[in-house]
Length: 375
Image (cartoon, rainbow, N blue to C red; front, side):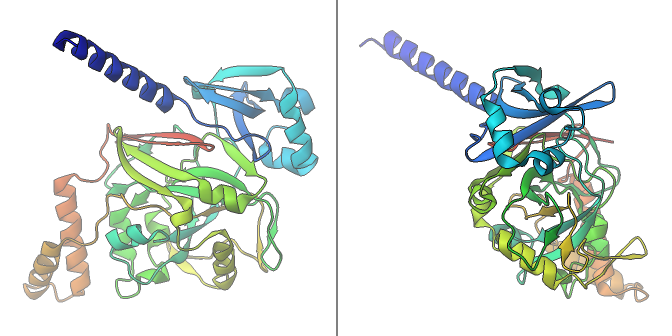
């Protein structure tokens, strides 16, 4: 075989592989209704329409308009599930009156509360990169969720990303009973590492002190564009592979099954920590658990894999922080000066998210998030 022919075959193979990879990147697998129900929503003239999704590729979503089929009050997946149940909605998938709409038309797939349960360092390698050795731990996240393509302002923050799987209560969850059904949605647990470090307890990180402050600014919880109700939330959730990209470069990737606390342990820990409080903007806040009940539409953020920007305190910040203290900074603890030196160093290096960057997430069965970073 001649060199020219070999070269032609090689080029054709590369082109075919590139085309296949591009096609794969444009598609998101949708679970069969025997495993899960998948929902999306659009908004036209202020009216929400709920879709039972059957396909997601080439920038479009295909699905049955449940609002048209079942009535104008069926405009939210939690409402639809509570009214009709799993089997009735699954049977709707056999209807042929499907529509195709652009992914860009999708809005928040479900209405959620503004108080959530979050877990820190629930993936072993993320705990290691964060230099936290005695987690996991819980804390409240107090923020109104935003759509999958909403921008996030960098401002003066050391802005970091955290892709997470969120369990969502479909109705009030009694923590003294077995929980058989929950919804799932993607979220980005956006974090200002500077605000977190300035408020954390460095001698007891797993108290969660400072985490609510660092993770609860406006826009700090974009959620994915699909909402999923699995038949078996435990096995389905553990099969999910989280993947996050920064400017197109893969940064985070792990299966939910790698988490330290699984779904049931997250519920047990939520019950155990229900009486704890955290300071947030001068107010005392607690986990959204009242008399062992988690209210409907509450999200439980299940932790992020390794690959975040945070990598612990810079070693040189310890040295310079001590020097700052010795050279007249006695009015504040050494830890204050160490943290401020670290923040100043990181601001100068610009390693954290900057205006003009983009964070994207694409996860089979759960859809996408595209987060532009703005000033």
